[in-house]
Image 1 (cartoon, rainbow, N blue to C red):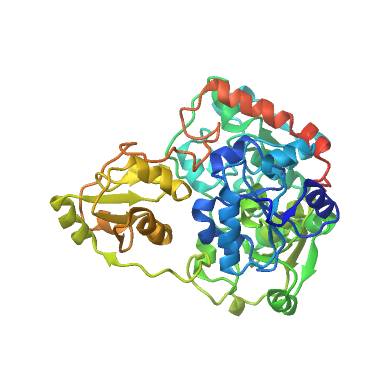
Image 2 (tube, one colour; image 1 turned 90 degrees about the vertical axis):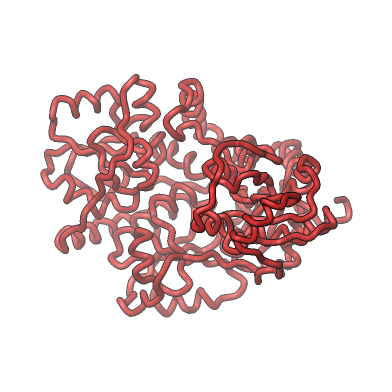
Length: 527
């Protein structure tokens, strides 16, 4: 490690304060990342580095700094990035411990910049909120109240406030007037914890809606801690809005964006930025995924605005890059842009797009390196081999997907811990690799061959083809060859979170404003 080029804590801090582009990448899995990391570190695990990095760090001459916590992952990641063509990759001097020793502030959990910013907003704007008990009393008394859930639809379906309607964050200013057309109707905005409730509520306040608007204090966590019951599997969603509502919302959103410092761009600017060398530009479509699939601007990525504000570090992993937001009415882009500008980003909204510019159809597909060659077999062939014995199936999907269902007898393996995992798996004459699509598994073929000296095959189309062919599956943690550290379980996640964990999460969020002050690099401002 001593022979490799490094950047120091001081180098990164100076670049952040100078608003230069910074790509500080933690290559550990998400669970250890969530235990301690710098504020603006982006988590791109070594296990899936090649599948994520080209979209998250799109410019190959970006100054990239990698670190781990002494596991040796960063040196491997450095070599892989150089093989992909990245020309300015270095290690963080001393790794995570070096950051700590230099006096750098460390944060726990995930999506911390956005969560800390939400706390800063509430502390400075005194965003109105109601306790869970107060909201339940309003609902049970049949008061004139609507509850709008600002999370993703899948999160809403898992658990929701009784009577709640799914209106993901960026949609609130566009949709709220039609869901609460009477200015005397009280609007309650909720999420699982605090951030999206605060940002959603403040969005409606900033946009000037005449209603009484309040966040559900502490979200569904607060609801459960109050001993109140949530609903599950609900499907209440927003409907289309009238043109009058859309025009009113567009004017409101533009005022907020201007106040926040959002910049304006044109179609010609967009073409220039997409071709520009030496500057990272993310082109982000903040409408719903369904709208994106129906037609989007070539080169744009689907990033629904509420999640973009909540998970900016995931979608735009180069701090200091240019963010260009796209929609077809100005509401979602300007409202999302208003928050991103306050989060310290240079943000542009493209104003003069035509319907014909939304010419590309289909879902967003991440750019990945040219797939490596591998000998493939069908699900039917694998089924036949399994009856013959002496074949090992290695599954590289997420641990959550593996637990949900997997090929009987398959071992779950973290690619970054392949050598250690193979030591736990009985040797076989043939190895078959799979994951959800086989994209990730394909990357491991050569390594499994080198480590075992045996023939290695790829399951065509991944485990989905096995399921589609009607073969039996297993569930549960039947054969884990690696620890389940690929995902950090959020304290507010699911329906069985311990009360202690939920309360500890809220206590942590309350302390984030002080942590921001100690760190001193955030560059946030609140309008």
